[in-house]
Length: 64
Image (cartoon, rainbow, N blue to C red; front, side):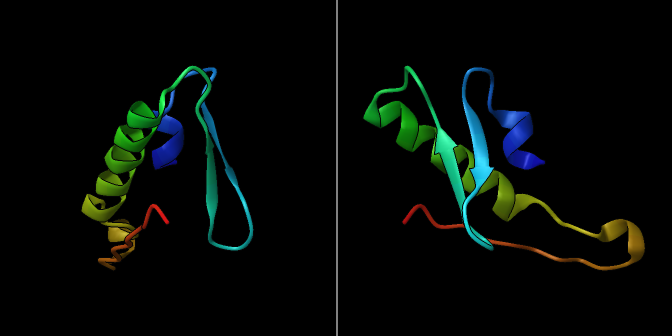
């Protein structure tokens, strides 16, 4: 959901494999794409998941 809320059409993300995602970023140059991946990576790291059920789950992501 994090990726979906950050990206704007025509950009989108897709699940690739079990725990991998691909970002499709048309009209982005290499630097803009790297900046976007860092924004998403940071947001994932900052988010606490499942807190409504009493858990504090955190995740991380890499750009490799």
